[in-house]
Image 1: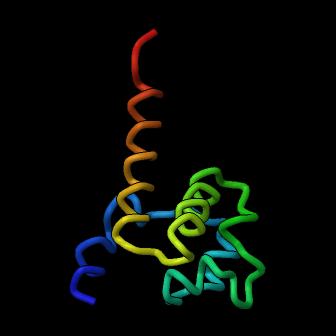
Image 2: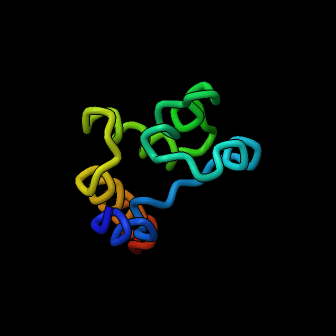
Length: 88
């Protein structure tokens, strides 16, 4: 639990969802959000690439939103930002 508090506001834990999907999920546990209970897998079916990428890391981490999955998602996001802003 304490370790989770360390990562809750990290870049890799921030996932954008469509407003209606996001508001319907409120304060569910991250694994419940990714599993899509009562929401038909909102991350996997999102129109936002960042949400689908986070879902991919969750799937590849045995369906657990852990420090490892968050760090992998953070690194992927950072790499994309750097690539976008590189000249040429």
